[in-house]
Image (cartoon, rainbow, N blue to C red; front, side, top):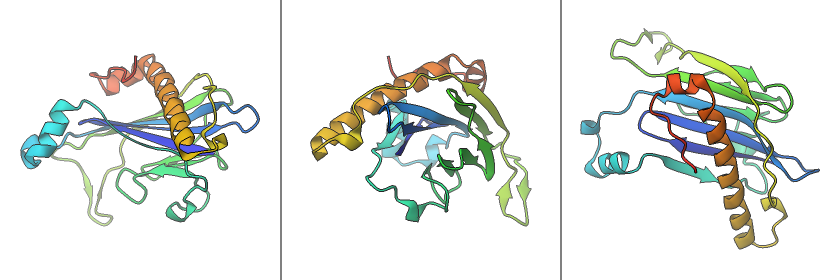
Length: 202
């Protein structure tokens, strides 16, 4: 079973995907996608939106994996994703062992490692636009492999009540966020892409 966690700030987002080993019950992070974006000018936002950006360094939009993945919302072959059908779509497939970002597909890292994609999606004022496609030039993407240990915790899927399932999912999400933060902090290329990066968990 797969899950996706999306974390956003004013100038970058972090998507990470995890799969649970049915034999051991441990969750393993299969892929992380960091996207650097151009911050939206505060003057174009409402007062409430501006305050949220200023007062909240990170906005976390996490959701527990459903009992049956909503494959109807995903292209065939993909089992998880974020911003599906949108301009920042990220798709993940445990079956194909691939991640799709900005229309490009990247294979998973070798076994026991995690794929990290760093996407520089900043848009300068003079960004090149494809007149035929109506889209800006594809962003530069670099691929890296890091080692992230599996997270051993009680599986949400094995819970017998909704409350227990939510509690287990929150605990698993916090543990996964911690190991993702540690891996990104140790990656020199991450600091070059996002100079102000700081771990979200302690």
